[in-house]
Length: 172
Image (cartoon, rainbow, N blue to C red; front, side, top):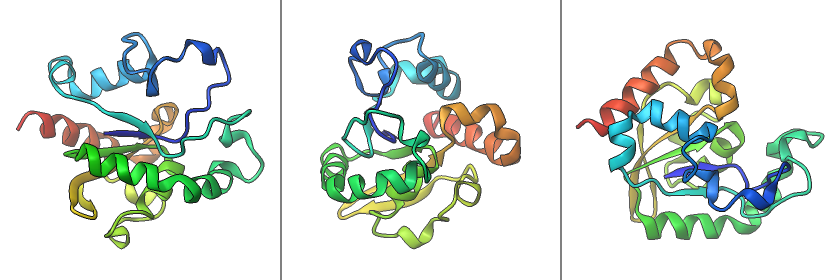
């Protein structure tokens, strides 16, 4: 399960037909996932994509004064039950959140939220940790936002370890 921040699209929103546009093989996220998982794994795994917050906004939350996290928190608090129901219904084996705001808000609904570092710098280690929401148990790791991979060197070996971890997860 992939969890994005929100469905806000500011350029050509009418072209978006599916969450995170995973059905579009030439989109940046699809290419990144194919590279991360490997072509063979990408084609055999079932990916479910959703958004942390279900609201669409007039501007990107990351561009709002105070940042995405501050802006999104009240919307997340209002509609987080939808995400919880999705997770409990889908019963994923693993969950990846995309970006720090998604990580921070997602961790707040986990039964074992104290097992996870609050910041991306602390949480993005490359390890997949056991997480749970009610009776649903899954492996969880935050992931850098797709645009952050360009500056990933600040995360050092965490990026390499994450890539190896994802790859080995699908090659069990």
